[in-house]
Length: 382
Image 1 (cartoon, rainbow, N blue to C red):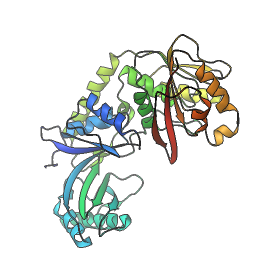
Image 2: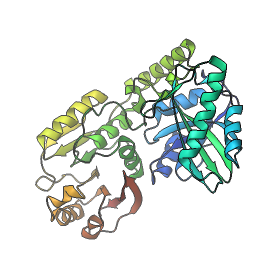
Image 3: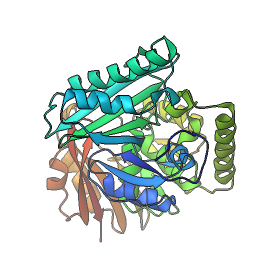
Image 4: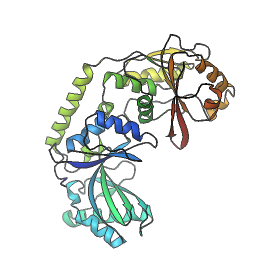
């Protein structure tokens, strides 16, 4: 495998799209729909193959991936010396010069090297030593905002080493300048929309929209707006080998995706909340994202959705938010069972919602919202 040339080429590279636990199936379906090759369902993330151009496109187009990484080296690493030597065998100067900052992380499973922090330090030393020998200067370490991020997975005394194309996690789209109370990550919101099997054309409502993340992600998906277009740059655009030619190719890719979005039509998206100050944040976020959901101020309990059918996807209160109204789950359960003809998707952070909704869910998906175990419940109300 050659990773010299960061401009689009025909040579296939091995990529890995990291996923929030529970969203792997949705991410796998998304990557296949986007036309990536050799996509395989895998726990924790989705491997796929493609060119550098495909890696860039995954950063721009994937709504569900947390990060996009490219495999740069594999080698036996039974000892710390073998790990150091294996890292030194790869030519890091193609990506890291003394002008770049560097961050390294690692995980270890079933290895003689069983401390991830020690492994990361050994890898960092090997990279820095190689660059210093070639240039008589060393790159600095920046754990918060590194130009080049390296990740190593050590398992069964073997190392797989990746470069992170994303830079900042991909859920940081760039449109959410402010957030309401307990917001969903943008990638998780996109995942539950796909998991709900919404068709991207029929009307959709979020009656507890908060800062508007579900509604905005739905509108962007429906209109075909690539989620990465609002990002100023990705991690790979800060690498040593990202040349003027590379930048021109990236501008062309962004332009092509913008042209596709300009021809798209958006479904009718209705978002409401009882808090006008939170709604104003949602409106500003939507303006930044370039979409126009319909925002309304009212309470779902006082103004339930109307109509013979529709799709409702929401992130209702749980935890501290639910303590403000201990009867909310019961009232919400009664409301949901009256939405005849509707599909309802609830991101439930408490078992109370399943207990209070007398209908059986059509299906449910266990998910992680940050550190909190949740369940995405989907109902078809007869």
